[in-house]
Amino acid sequence: MYSPTINNLIEALKKLPSVGEHTAERFIFHWLKSGKKEVTELMLALRELIEKVKSCEVCWDFSETSPCAICSNAKRDHTTICVVAGPQDLMVIEQTGIYKGVYHVLRELVDIGDDDSLQKIKIKELFERSKKSELTEIILALNPDMQGETTMLYLESELKKTNPKLKITRLARGLPLGADLRYADEMTLQSAIKNRMVK
Amino acid sequence: MYSPTINNLIEALKKLPSVGEHTAERFIFHWLKSGKKEVTELMLALRELIEKVKSCEVCWDFSETSPCAICSNAKRDHTTICVVAGPQDLMVIEQTGIYKGVYHVLRELVDIGDDDSLQKIKIKELFERSKKSELTEIILALNPDMQGETTMLYLESELKKTNPKLKITRLARGLPLGADLRYADEMTLQSAIKNRMVK
Image (cartoon, rainbow over all chains, first blue to last red):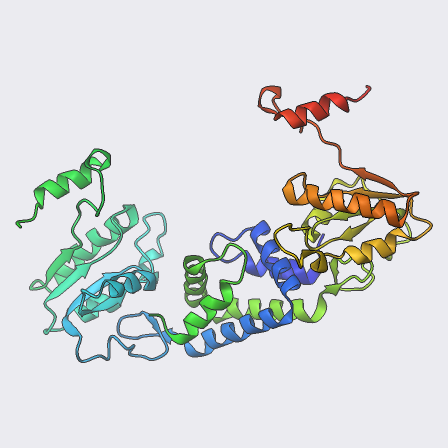
């Protein structure tokens, strides 16, 4: 067996997503070979993470300020909220440069197999925000997979109750750029025909 | 873009083997969601790693003592050295329970594309050990791939020069348990026929 110190670190690393025994071993022997400098840098970066990064208490993205840069930006359109699953999704939408509204980060999605999943989602906070009179639209931008669809269905029905005047939209479903009609699945193709665009 | 703190940590994590931008992001948002306790545990484990774990100055395995538990064990057979590429290989050989000798961890292998690779390998240290009169055998237990074979060929020729009386062996090549003759590669099968075992 490895020394207790190495085993401890293996256990700590195995908590990370998709890291198992062997990956943890590879990380550790990489650090042992690379020397103290790299480990010290990582420890400093981790300390900064827990000291500086917090939740924005408006949109629940992670940020060094609360409210975050987007929520406190008066130039953004605060009448539209785009609901995303996590900070990475927020980032890819920001990178398109086309969206000028604000966000709401759910952090988790509805999981039918987990009774507590509704507690973990920032859903109450979304309902609170949805009551604001200046709000006109909520875009549900979750992945069109099982968990995303379940969550969007739930949010749609609940949001209509809390604020019936709200326009609730979803990202368009259709053919991605460069797609081949013959390989598109039936649902996508049906949706692409139904929602065909006028040029 | 993410906040500077998160970008810093992404850069620090990307130095790990097989960790890219997206994996680093997933690690960080896992930590931000899991809370301070998990990150603090990891930081403590990392600190222990750099404070406690050092190189055994006999076999160059990583250990909390130098010499390590195996090198300082009088019950082990110190007339045989098994040469391995890394600590993980040492561990799998130990787990078979069949080897009673000592080890030598090379840390790196000969890389024809990298002129400095010979400097990084614990090869001078192996040659020093190979001169000891009590030594009778060196087992070269590197992977039978390109880098492993190159390193073994080099070690073989050099070790014969430093100590001509030494017996230098390699792990047997043959069919692994449960193998199918039809799917074995030619080299393996040739070797399995040539080195067939008397029952």
